[in-house]
Image (cartoon, rainbow, N blue to C red; front, side, top):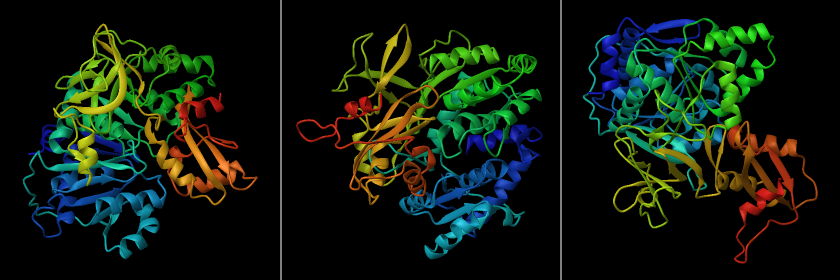
Length: 493
């Protein structure tokens, strides 16, 4: 029994989703997701963990398809709607997806490819309705979802979570942040990422709350929706708060005051996926009257640490461990460090993922012998609160709420005919957390940044594209010939 689906039966008449000017009840969501599950089954009794890729616009159809995949026994593999075809193709081929569900707007992009690869393509708007529903019993230990994260290798890895993992991730947040069926939230986050899928959408659906979707980011539209007086829970990454502040500062003082008074009535505002600059946190408090609740998590574990809903929220700290999550700070030998000493965050609990898709050796390397997951993030504990100090790998960049592999970007850059070598790093930036920059050594004497940027965007997602390029004669290296990335960072200062 999937508790997320069962919970919906308690709230049949409640509005579950608002999107594209339409409102949908939990009853409608259940009926339509079950009908779509029958379409996915296509006469089979159970999909038996078949991977189902879905590239569906945010809104009712997205949640309907996700729930349908789970109810049919498949593994949901959300595809980013803004990624280039090369990135989408990588995910579909890595998971060996047998079915792809898309919004009609993506038919031109994927139709030929799916035919060539003999992948069943379903356009969500064209789906027939099934009245005779016969769905399989799904074990909570069954794999439920694969999300792709760059990790520490040069190719994205598929993070596999079971229904049990997802339920643990959702339930601990519902309790910690006191979700209820009276809540109304707005999803402005990507739905191929744990923040948007779990923290916003799934927590709302678990609780019988309402989740509204917008098709694309617009500070003006977000504030207009705030002013309607329905929304009381809002979650975003630092970059979004930065943009909302910038827009607010362009408004007349009477408009600013009206918005401030409106936002003061919210129950909860959360920030995560990247470090929140204290300056942004303080400015947002002036704008909204709220001290943002910071938390810590990642694709492999959902959320693990959070500032309290009731109680002191410390600027610069991510809080205390969530219920059911064990945290240990460890040295390089994975032994617990002394109080007030920095160590790598290790995590245990039902929230921790099952493993990396088809990568047993890489999965094994990310766990200690006694079962602790190695996050790669360094923290210190002070008066019970955890403070993130950095990462144990300079090859991981956190920008705009994403964890990005510098190695993947470097591999792409090196395929350019004019580039001889390169090094990609993240440098501190108030808006983005870290700005992706690249030092490049050229084969030829000239290259235009604009044309290089366009070339890169055809090959990797926009959020992974370097924001600055610096042409150098050679890259700084150590005695062993390895590029010293801390020295690369200094080149941009």
